[in-house]
Length: 114
Length: 114
Image (cartoon, rainbow over all chains, first blue to last red; front, top):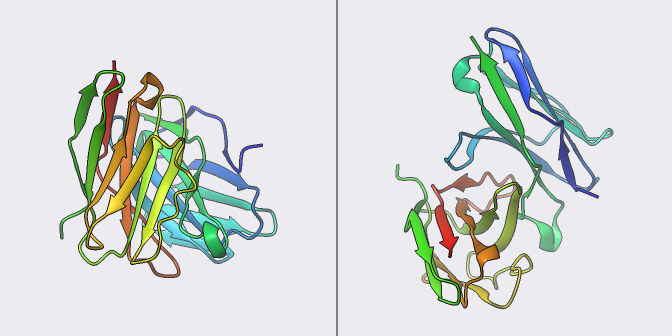
């Protein structure tokens, strides 16, 4: 069983729409959660991190965390063609010896078409 | 400031040869991580250095893989007797080593084993 699962893609949205990316995780003790964007042939680039339940907004991006449901999501408002990339959900497990070892989902490919 | 740097950016080697991959973390970051990203696979944790503590090697796939970090800064990942399945992009990340630990990735080294 995968520890971090993301909604299967690819996801295609029209320019200006809201893109919704979802992620579930299995380790209930996980403490912090990250969204990375990865353009083809490039390394992951941090977009957002969240560690408290609720919403966190940064410009067009909103991360949502629900620890009870073990669910984290990323909303991209007013999607632009430049948002087209693979989005990786990463989970930092609880303390102890696992701390710092991010577990990544498989990624969701997002395409924003004009 | 300067980000994480890695060298070489590309490495082509023959099966059975040894390779060394280098990572220079962001100045002041005490934590350093190595990940591997294979085609069709997610990002896979390999090894983690935190300050002067013993590294967490739990993600290394075999004893052909080793890593060291000299002077708490630059790290070298060594793969001995390379195999074709070692072909992947090797990514290094660094972080401040604090409680909510955001990791920043370098550009990666693409390793191809012929």
